[in-house]
Length: 201
Ligand code: ATP
Ligand code: MG
Image (tube, rainbow, N blue to C red; front, side):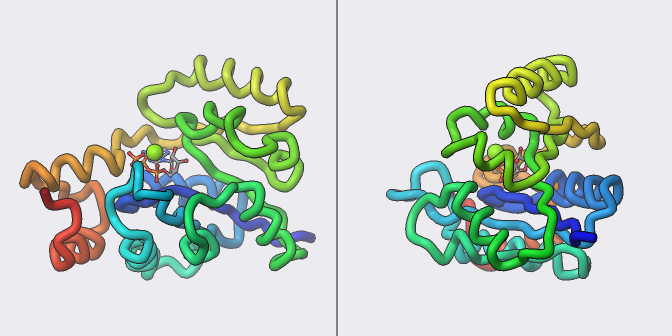
């Protein structure tokens, strides 16, 4: 029996309660042994992300400290610029030959799959779980996923998780406006943000 391992990629700028709840729901439902969170590297010229990759990595580590089934990988932040998910998964497959990977994304991310590098190859390397996210209805997500599955001979599954209207964009905006983001992210991560003056104007 292969070891079931979840993978959750993201910018985690910063990691929040939405990521953690969704990961835990998928872990329970599919009986995964662990989930590896993979913060993305800094894109060239830092377009799109605000905090440095090292800060995003450290915040992700802090967020998962209390959960021994949640791990963090530095595989993407160690590289300069953008990593392709396909390459990351190929590396992980080599590193963990006895693992069956479950790649976890929100429905907002999975509909972008056609623009990723070699979706068909990627879908062969892992099981794909698309988790519901506010903003996209379940019907729309279902239709889009079946279209993508047809296009790339995939088997992406739609998973209904508790809908949490939490995003890193909203958290960054609140902090820049001097508003509280309490309870939307772990307190320890919030403390790290304050101590290091992240997301300030
Ligand atoms: P940003 O607003 O900066 O894009 P984000 O909240 O979308 O941040 P990401 O790091 O972009 O967080 O997301 C990583 C992965 O987690 C993506 O697959 C995304 O769809 C998923 N995700 C993030 N927040 C949620 C949520 N509240 N519910 C379900 N999935 C989520
Ligand atoms: Mg996002």
